[in-house]
Length: 274
Image 1 (tube, rainbow, N blue to C red):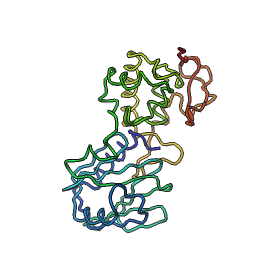
Image 2: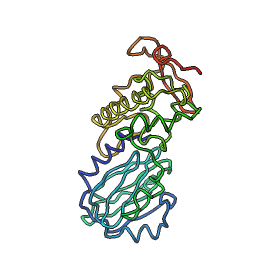
Image 3: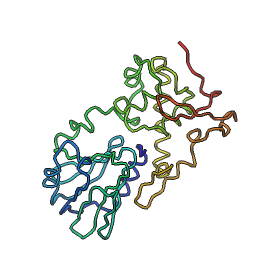
Image 4: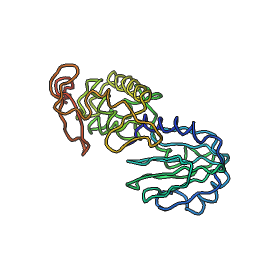
């Protein structure tokens, strides 16, 4: 579930904990976590690399090392724990040893996450990033319109596609479409260029507010680094089925859009017809 604000929260928290630490060893307990590189090469290449900076693109964590970038996609439930002593349990799949006798653990109950390495000059050619769209902070209404106006699928499904726009997941797409007054089942081809601007503007507002509040803590997601998100207290529609719409007081409903639980107000979000 971690979406852009949750990943940004992890970035900001890890920066305070592990910048300038040197990795002297790494243990891998579930080989499938390591992707696009062999486990042996991963262990060899990362040894004695210092963590100089931590950033992200979309939902991908990017650790800048001396000679490489370490990329980490948390997928559904990936988390990091920073420890002052060695801890190993059944859900800790990768453990980084630092030169000051502290540890960083990658923990993932569902084992969907992926970790990889990229050469410094090949970062955006890496398979984790090379097909990813622009983030809402960077995309223009013209660019978004060109990407979606030929698609005859639901706008919610389109906005969840990281190749179209990076960083939006199920929670934030529901919130953005509500604020833009767009029914999530409206075909993408019917969305106007003006509505593209509404989507972008509301995405930026929602994401910035969620980042400021440490993301959203729902079900099993927490940052696992001593930070709990508070944006769930600001949600307008997501998880609010049968509660009154904050604008018109009509009950919010829950439907499925391409298999994803979706929350909306039928009064405020009218479905566009061809």
